[in-house]
Image (cartoon, rainbow, N blue to C red):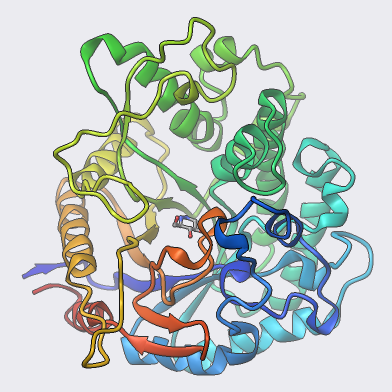
Length: 445
Ligand SMILES: OC[C@H]1NNC[C@@H](O)[C@@H]1O
């Protein structure tokens, strides 16, 4: 038995655009993901979040699944365009009322709501004015935080300002593979900085509530394929991990990467605001990053890994996303955080999970043994990190339901519950029953 500490929070995680649907209901405004997914070729099979899991209407039945799992916490995100359809200006009371109903139902079930303010669905009206490359979006986010704090501040115990600012900026504005679909190095750096500043502006606002405040970053230990690739690997680590961890936890950008990028867009006071003390750090872990030096003589100015192509070790098993399955990377990552960042607050694993080729078998079940093995391996590695002295307070499996996996559409299933999108029927996979047992035991059998 690998027991987790007493009081460890066991949860599952979702995000608004990936599950809600009802994208025009009750005053919701368009987001950049509505625009992007409607763009031919942007998302596999032309999938969009227009219906998704129809969770906006079926949330009560989905919350019954949370009770079935026995989780003590549920991480979900608010859709900024439901609350401020234009991103700023007029508040849409229907949007606030919707999320107040969700929070109150969770509390009534004895489940802790962990609320993410921004999980990538920026109001399109703000993108029309530059989005995260426009410094004014910082103030828009701070106002959004004020509106939410006023409406829900007395009942949400844990806030997460941003989900994965690296993806929002480097993938959304750097490679263009995510909304808003911009492929420009300087835009990615500006977006990353303004996202971090928006986090810094929201922290004092959320501190006025009764809830704890944190941020979620996606982190990945970086390995060179050969010793000659060490420089490229250090740059990728600088881009994916240190470019966010250093400002958030140490109040500075990493010197080597400032030089590499020629970054000079921070204004006086920005770094002090970004480094606002956190009650917890949310960590999303999926895989390691393997790097081989690019053969291009002009390294990519923004995302070094684009000049150093990913060369995944052949021998390692992979998920349907093509990511290597490396549970020990989670232990390695957490021990590194504790070693490199003396100011590390308590950690929550706010996402960990995998996509596999799930299907409903002739007996009507989904026997996802691969997912059970994936989760068991990562929970064991998490227990190793805790044994090594890392203060981890909870674990959220990604995800409750199969859902819209961004540019991959619905073809990548991460859920503990299978969703038949034609009928919206939810079906517990074997991993749901397994996870419910782990939660009940407070650890691995
Ligand atoms: O790719 C799986 C997940 N990764 N983190 C952010 C989530 O929105 C994704 O679905």
